[in-house]
Amino acid sequence: MAIDSLKTVIEELNQSSRKSDSLYKAEKFITADLRDQILKIDDYRKKLEDNNKSFKGENLKLNQSNRILIIFNSLVAILLVITLVFFLKRLTRKKSSQQTSIDLPQVNSSNDVNQSTRFASFEDRLMQLERLGKLREKGLLSEAEFIAEKQKVLGK
Image (cartoon, rainbow, N blue to C red):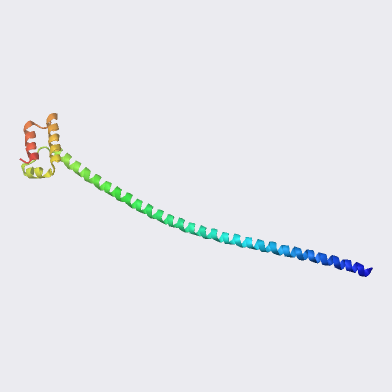
């Protein structure tokens, strides 16, 4: 009886050993499968990190080109403002010189040459003649003064 009971115990231990072997083999297959999945996930993570690095590089390039564009546009704006100031000063100089010629309708005979050469363009002469006509209409110039100034403007 003791031998029979030992045989049953041995038989049970053998069955239990086979079950644990089969469980061990199953666990081995599952672990191998999980290991493969972990490797695939790790490869995918590395690809994502590489993509992320390349996007950061492209974004950095975009930031640098944006900075360059901002600097360029600022320089253009500064040049435009400088040009505008230059032309406004030039325009006010022309207007002030024209106003001084209107304010002083009677000029000495020594300035006759200067007066005729001051009007470089035909339009300047026309504008001066119009101003002289307005001064005559207002009564600020007599007819003789008007004719004398007109001849100076025309260079006669």
